[in-house]
Image 1 (cartoon, rainbow, N blue to C red):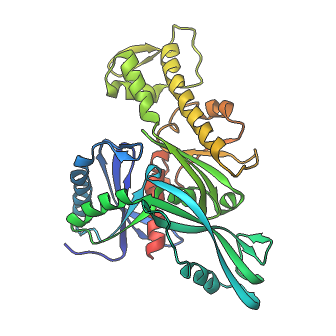
Image 2: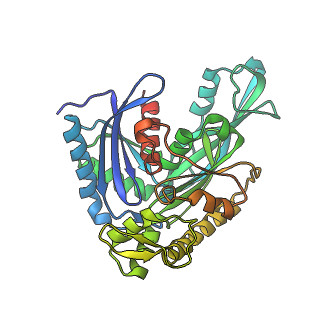
Length: 372
């Protein structure tokens, strides 16, 4: 099979499935989705894949299914790295001039190109670097330095670091499968850039992706991540709680979860009913769900408390991912838990506007933008 050079693929390791998307650039910074493949797998927890021995076969399934859909070989592939395998750090890049000059895009590019990227970490490698803001001269902070005059420019830059073990593990699998042209991208950074408008990022934003068994909490500034926290708990834990406590199958618990309205009050006689006719009291079901939601929100609060940079209280918490966003009434519940506005967000794409697709669609958008 041929390799088409104008198409790009991404592989996204979600907390319950591997998603592989392929697309090509369209006009107005948009893209056309050419292929979409989902492979169920056991996910990861605490920075490790739960069933690493199955990973090669599952990645091979994703690649083979994609190539069958496209009728061509996978060429350029970007691997999304989940937050549990990453951390962020920052560095200030500096360039001085003999006299006052007009800042151009060429000067900005040279500033980043001359970065020696000395990595003092033996366990991690840089996969993304991006400016959070610039400082002209000594005190003029800006996100738009081009066109301004200065004798000195500084770029306060965010670096996303990936565990070398992750790179070696996935890289060796791709090598063995004959994939030659691949690179790594941060899931969280791609979501931040893909989901949040530039003016929101420039003033500082908080993005929370609650998935099936993992949740990431990041502070976004400009085009970079200021801080990144994560923990291994998500919407799948709610399903597991319902299954265990009510003694029903996992599929029944998942169906029951999709019916739940977290803000619904009951006196004890009202019930949810499954397609198979089984009935469960609303009060009992909601108590189980809210008990786990309380644990998730407490862990999110802990992450927010550990952030060094404090943002004004009017800055919202942006929630995405498939773990919480589908609950009816979840926004009202979250508003009571946090002293901030709450916004539930998803990709700004008509056919893919679902919060559980935020990571995959954002990855593809960033990959295509980098490849062009």
